Amino acid sequence: MGLVRRKRTHCSNKELHHRYKTKRRTKDLDQVQEDLRPGNRERLLAMPVDEDLPGLGQHYCIECAAHYIDKTALARHRRGREHRRRLRDLKEPAYTQKEAEAAVGLTTDTGRGGGQRPAGPQSLLSLKRKNDAARQPPAMEIE
Image (cartoon, rainbow, N blue to C red; front, top):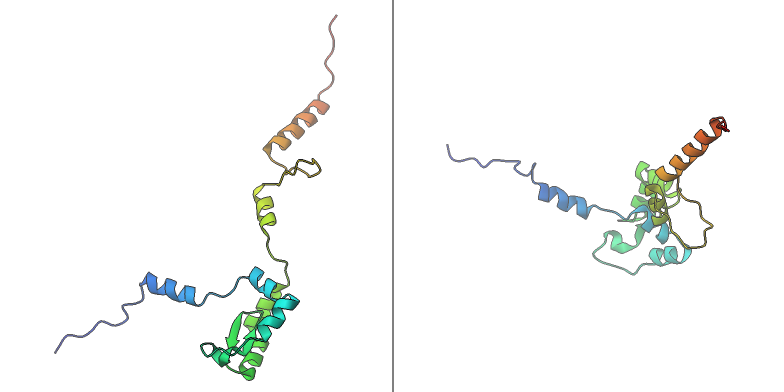
């Protein structure tokens, strides 16, 4: 009996997994919301013929950022679960940098003094001191 080649040696190849993960990556939700604006939407729907894309690039789902072979495949996709989930995710407003900074506790100081400060440890400490001072009875004066 001769040597037998071992099969399925690619199961732990991380480079291969990362390559396919990168290849399958779609647009993020904020990018898709930018594409859904009226001027961008018309531009994406009237794409020129591209031989490298499925269906020559003529059947495109803007919400999912995917090309399909023909109208029936696109219609089948639009009835599917993936498309409906994507639509539900797109109904929420895009996550902005300002929201991310506010979540961390960073604020933009414009120097006007009109903005509210986030509730940090210093403001909590000052509130505690004010409450403690209000609770204590006034000290008696000794003559």
